[in-house]
Length: 193
Image (cartoon, rainbow, N blue to C red; front, side, top):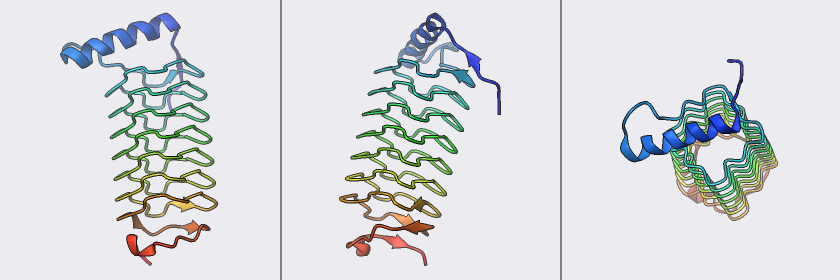
């Protein structure tokens, strides 16, 4: 685990401006490199961080409301208690990320890698997790009400106490550690026993 480096508001604004140029022009080395950055409680509402590297970054308590985090590397990032309401995390690498208590209301996590991620108590109401890899993810006490988990890999996921009411589990697969919520539509699932 790397030591977190403090980024000032001015440095962050400069990094984000160069990153936008990199997105639009695909030239130079302007891709945001925020590996190990300390962005505790940072205000990144609506920020476009498409394809950025936030490996082991500290984003706990950060405001990422409707931010574009698609294809972002958030491996082992700390997003505990972060506001990711409506954020686009499609195709993002959130493997082993800490998302405990995060607000992911209506977030797009389609095709995201959440292998071993800790989503204990996270709010994923109406979130799109279609095709997401949730292998060994901790979803204990998570709110997945109305979430789209179609074609998601739930192998070894811990869903104890999770709210799955109205969730779409069509084609979801895996061997779940524990699930206390009884589903009425098991025919849509492909779980290994």
